[in-house]
Length: 251
Image 1: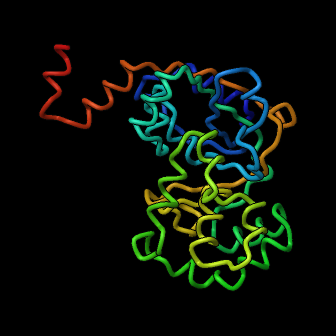
Image 2 (image 1 turned 120 degrees about the vertical axis):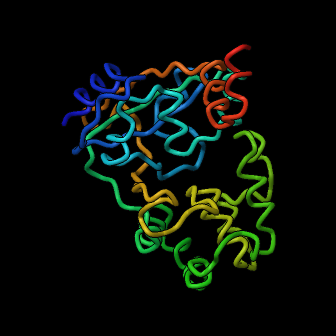
């Protein structure tokens, strides 16, 4: 399937639960921004060298869903989506040929770090690899909650925080700790506490990483505008609270 064929199919059947089917040959990323300049690359955050994308398998599961349902399905938080609606953020689904994606396994993470962040960075992480893979969550990691707090801040705010570990800050550290190493993977690669390292997320859905590139350079790239409203979000919130559905319908 070509990116254009998927885009047409996604737009044709959104909101319908009747059309399903296997998809192959494409991947996609939900991209957000306020201005056109924000949509020039797969990720507009400074320092982002890799981007998380939906695999063909995940895209097949999005057919028949509305844009808001699709975003929730792959893991976007309703509260975050509501905040983005209020601050004027727009969303697009960028679909392109699946050629460069790598499954998000721990083995591939170490290779991707070396390839895209450099030998010095990879060498600093190497002594902590076993400990990082053995972590069951951030509760057992000193400073784990701070890693999460910083990653949830707006872009400008988190990059202004010294504790937000970019590549430059990681390389400048005199004494690297396990917390620093795990924070770098979270802040600079997006390997958050839910990252399993198996190539699939906690729902069993494939996770794929690609180099962060200009959208104009993506083979067959198609950008689908997504309309997401506060009403859409409230409907999904009500659907998660069965006892309150009647109340929500009367609002």
